[in-house]
Figure 1 (cartoon, rainbow, N blue to C red):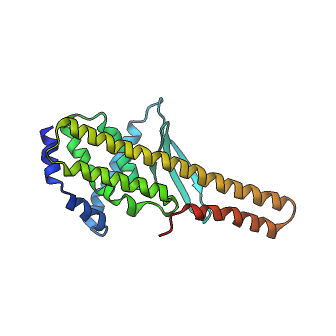
Figure 2: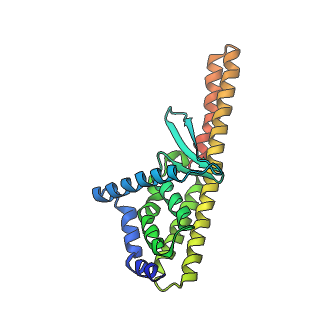
Figure 3: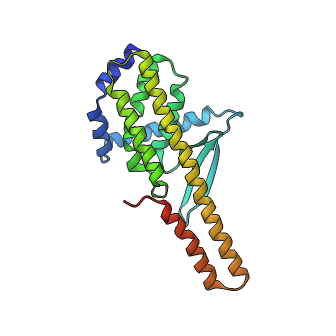
Length: 220
């Protein structure tokens, strides 16, 4: 646990805030892209029949294709939100890590957690999701601030961080489910009017249902 304390001392809150603001650093981008590739590879290697990771593909109302992965606990990754994917992976690995590697895994999450709110896809930006993101960042800052934390305190802080991330995953599960249900209802309304030969009415019904999607998103 000494290695964890040394790491926490070196990793200050100021560095966390710097990463959250500096999205144009080429070297940092290259490093995190490499991390994403490693995580994707390890996720494939670690798949087990008892907790199979499934991929879902969905076409959004603007024609964009979104792809996300889920297991028995819910969504574990998005193709267009790598920061979430990496943090989810690192937290899962920490539960089974040796003490000597925990500090490195905490470090691996620094950029990703700081950047969660910046990189989240627009369609996931509901008020509830953004609140959960802020809570995760708060817990992480508390974790790296406490340089004198005992082994038990570090474990407790990590557990609180994991619980906050579980809350985010649960909210994302609900958001994706609601999004797809609204879109399915819109398609159903459209098809019903088309069967009646009412093209204009079909378009009107579809657009009316789709408005519910826009109301889900947090207005900045």
